[in-house]
Image 1: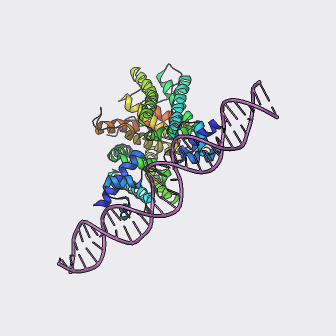
Image 2: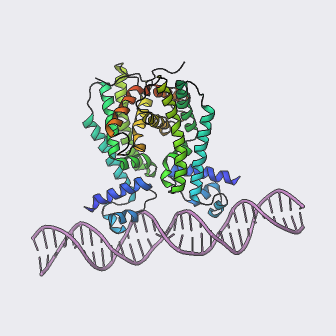
Image 3: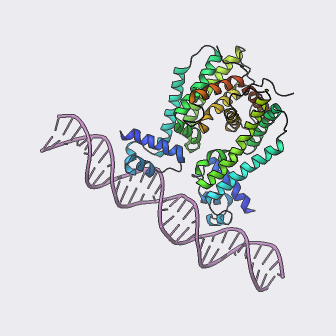
Length: 190
Length: 190
DNA sequence: CTTGGAATTGAACGGGTGTTCGGTTTTAAG
DNA sequence: CTTAAAACCGAACACCCGTTCAATTCCAAG
C-alpha cells in the first residue's frame, strides 16, 4: 500500500522539481509518513530513481513488442510513431525523468539505464533499415533518421496538454504523416 | 576578469550536474576564489541562471536575424535547419541549461525566459506558414510542424560528438533534407 | 610612498541534507 | 487475548546549503 505511494510521490516530485532538488523529507510528507519510514521501501534515494527509470524503459520495450505489427516497413513506421506518442503522453513524468535525470545516476546505474535506452533506439533504426532496403523509404543515414524521429516524437510531451486545440488522435495522425515525409515516404501505407 | 570566469564555471557545472545539484562553493572552487567573493559578480544564484538563459536566447534570436536569407520559404527552411544545428552545436552547455532548467526559475524569471523561447518558436512557424501559402509545402498544422522541427533539430545535441562518424556539415545536410521531407517538400531548393 | 576603492577572505548564520536507529505503534495471524 | 512481525516515529548524526559581513589584501592612481 505505502510502497507504491512512495514511488508515485517520488515520480511526481522528481519530474516537477528535479531529483537533486527533492528531499526525502518532501517525499515522505507527500505520502504522509516520516522520513525514516521511507527506508522500508527503498534502500536509498538513488535506488528510487534507478528503479523508476528501469521500470519505465522496460515497460516501453515490452509495450512496443506487443504493439509492433511487423511486416511492411511503412506500416511499422506508422505504428511506431503512433505508439511512441501514445505511450509517452500517458506517462509524462516518467518520460521527463528518464530523459533528464540521467546525469543524476551513479556510473553503474547510468550504464544500465543507457543500455535500455539504446535498445529502444534500435527499434526505429531497424524499421528504417528495412524500409530503405525495400526501397519504400529514402534514408540518407539510418542512425541519424532514427534519432531525429525519436526526438521529434518525444517533443510532443513538451507542449501537449489535454483539452487543447487538438486531441491525441489528431496529434498522432499529423506526426505519423510528418514521420513518413521525413524518410521520403510521401504517403501513409494503405 | 573574474566575472566571465564565474559565468563560464557556472555554465559548465549547471549543464553537467544541474542547477540544484551545484553549490556556490563548487562554482567558487572552480574559479579559484572563496564562496563569498562570488557575490561581487552576481546578487545570487538564481540571477546567475536567469542571466545565462536570457543571454543565450537573445543571442539565438539575434543570430537568426543575421542568418535569415528571407525570400523563398524553401530556402529559408533550409537555412533555418542548418542555422539551428550549427548554433546549438556551438553552445551545448547553454542549450542544455536553457531547455532543462526552466523549472528551476522563479515565476518572474520563468515568464521572461519563456517569452524569449516563444519568440524563437515563432520563427519556423512563420516560414512554414509562408511555404504552405505558396503551396511549396504540405503542412497539416503549422504549430505542430514547427515544434516537431525544433525538437528534431535540437535532438542533434544529445548525440553529436566532434570526431564522430559524420562531421557537422554532413549532419546539417542530412537534417536539412529530412526537414524538407517532413513538410512535404521533396527536394532542397535550387 | 600614500591612499582609496575594489577584490577577496573566512567565519558565521539559520536552516536543510540523506541516512540510521532505538523505541513505539499498528496489524494480522494463532 | 497473545504474539510476532511489519510499519512507523522522531531524535540524532555529520555534513552541506546560500548568503552576509567585518576584516584584510591587492592594486592602480596621485
